[in-house]
Amino acid sequence: MDAPEESTAGHDHPEPSGPAPKRREPRPPHGDPRLPIEAARDALTVKRVFGDAYVADGVTVIPVAKVYGGSGMGYGDGTGQGPAGEGAPHAEGSGGGGGFGLVARPAGAYVIRDGKASWQPAVDVNRAIVGGQLLGAIVAVSVACVLRARLRRRR
Image (tube, rainbow, N blue to C red; front, top):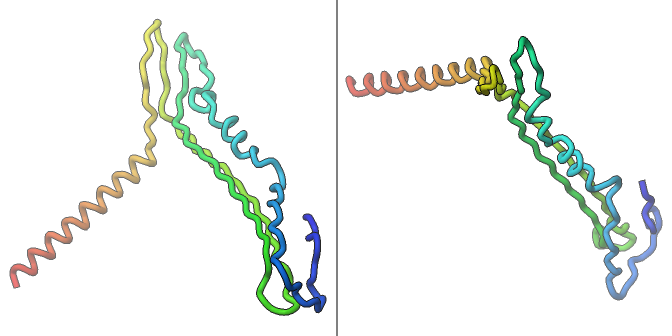
């Protein structure tokens, strides 16, 4: 890490009177700020969507995936005075940060047989089960609400 240019911590120097110190130019971030963007560009290629084709028993299969991704970057800098008062240290700052995320899920495959291409969608059984459970929960809550309303009307 870079050491501060001037440190007054532990010294009893009165604050200088007169004009405020000039604002310093922000320090460049550590590392390459283009790295997350380059990583996103490398990861979000057509090879992530269309896998390598393979041939089995005279049938060509081209796997396909749904790919979602994003990246972000942040940076901060701090200058200026610390808390007012005699002997107060100068405020310092720094910053940085960045990130990248990628999600890929199978979508299906193009199957080429006898010169004819067809689409075979991928079935995600786990999503189907969760969807069925959510639907069942919504139906159960709806039935409970209807039965409760009917009981209130009878009273």
